Image (cartoon, rainbow, N blue to C red):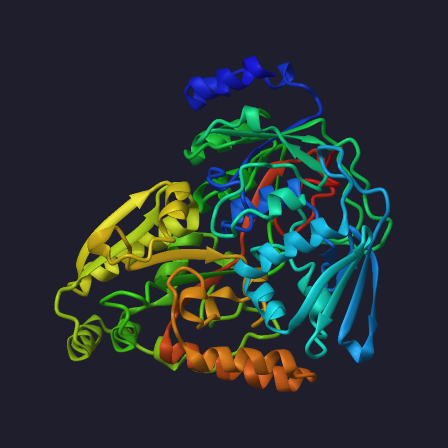
Length: 526
């Protein structure tokens, strides 16, 4: 295996993939991710690629089924005491980490403490938590200031960052520093020594992993059973090369083919094309709200007359019109929180001239605007190109920084002004599950330095979010999410640019793929 890995890393992609498929081990699954694995720490970053890596290597206390309901994973179950102010979670006995050490309650406590610093849902839990303790090796006790009905779903939602369970020694890493120890609790081991930055990662089943006996299907629910001896991630930035490799059987799964390639693959024998996710992605423009010029909400709002969601959607979906969605807001289309509240500024005729006038009135006078964007990840790259054209037509003073996705992930935490290495705007395509409701939607946090990259300070959004957690009835929650969207469209922590349904392509002999994200358990060859 080491010889093959070195060969793949040293040769050009087209050469490395030229070996006939029959020469490969039958129980190896070869996968082309949407971008290179730039970080191995799924708490430190919200990168979707790192989340996918995380679900291979780590497990969670609870999973989430296709109806967004929690189901036990590492947990055996839970109970409530003192009118909901105490929650007791029991671990299944006999569980082990990849290094053979038992999974203990104190590992879970340390993991959740680190997660609570970075995850919007975790921050909410921390705000109502009096104490989280491990009375014994199999018991986790949450003592709350007041009942939190959403607690158990919080511990299993697959929204980034996910509350993955790590060994205590790893979980004690500063939440703002990346972990280097990949010892996990999940169904696969990460083969650290085989990693080639920008090119290759590999995983092997964890022999001592014990799938949950609990029921539930879809997303991260139910037993996680592995059917391959080895999973290989091959980073192939050229879509044509990846598609050709899939057609020849040298790759088994191409995560996110671009529209023109997807149409080719639909017509190819031996290839199956299907939905990747349960909810559509949300396309968005994210502002850096800390530094000029977009620290001024009026300058952010001035862009709205020029923004046409259809332009951004078309750049992502091409001729695959069934994949595109316009008229979307800050929650994903089709989710319980979606509405049309506050979206009037994105409707009606679009006008560059009006946007220019409003930019001038708001005080924009040629300040540097640095656009940070990727070249190797499909949707954000397409959005960035449309955004560059838009900003140029608006006459803004641009500095364009295009690089690989891994570098974007490394650079976007920089809070400095553009003149000192920071950034002004960046474009993203976020999974619908991450923006499902106020609990998961990190982009709607208005807590300044504690918010997602861009760091807006919007106290009203924080107040409404707190009210949503306390609202027991769906109608009350819906009223709150409508107001949140209205506030967001006025203050603009980000601009919704439409939505899209992602499709993925696999070899037709793969069976039982879980729709929801790139999930590798239960997947098998016919």
